[in-house]
Amino acid sequence: MTSPADKLRALLAEDRLYVMPCCFDALSAKMIEQAGFPLTFMSGFAVSSARLGMPDTGLISYGEMLDQGRNICQRVSIPVIGDGDTGYGNAMNVKRTVQGYAAAGFASVMIEDQIAPKRCGHTKGKAVVGREEALLRIRAAADARDEGQDILILARTDAREDHGVDEALERARLFKEAGADILFVEALKSEEEMRLFCSSLPGPKMANLVEQGHTPLLPPDVLQDIGYQIAAYPLTIMSAAMRAMRDALQAMKEGRHPQELLDFAELRQVVGFDDYYAEEERYAKP
Image (cartoon, rainbow, N blue to C red):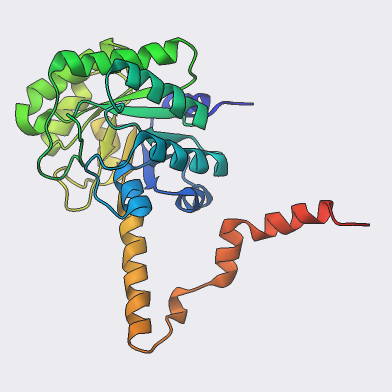
């Protein structure tokens, strides 16, 4: 059986861009797979919002993220990248995070260089640790992988905001030397910066596209031309779901039933009732 990490390696071996809607629970992950996307990402922002109803400011724990990720990975066959935040502590915590995410079924884990408590890369108040500590996190993650964990390391830096593009690119270069499989410079602010990142460093790179965020929301063909292999959309389907729920609630508040938004047959199909009934028949009494 092909492992999640091997599936992701095979995708990255192709010279193309993958549009990657991000999930926040097992249902959203299943819908992404059923829509035909070949991979997804468990967004920390989205999980914190959906599971806790709280902002992405380091309030959700390693255990909660791991539990959510295990449920997601068990319900889809496409590779899932997991948001590992800062690794939840020192280098030893980073190794444990990588080990846990690999055991949960993730194809890759993202480790970043923010100080704790971390926060969304497109909101105010974020800061990064020193270069040496940042590098230790990636080395520890790569060591965990090399010591037997079948998982890819996605290294993220948020240094662009306070330290500029040059420092962000230097950190990404050092992360690559330390063993990172995929590079991610968060919150680049122009197409020129994005092109500089992709042309300066080898290997797969990810762009993070947040609606009304810092990074230009460029079309996929332009992102591919720039040199990205993954275009992550961390909040798109969560925002769409929130809008649909708000519209349905408003209709009910006004005394109307939002039937035009609803499809019970589709809901049953997506969550797997048909498959369940077919399996149940196998164990029916003769």
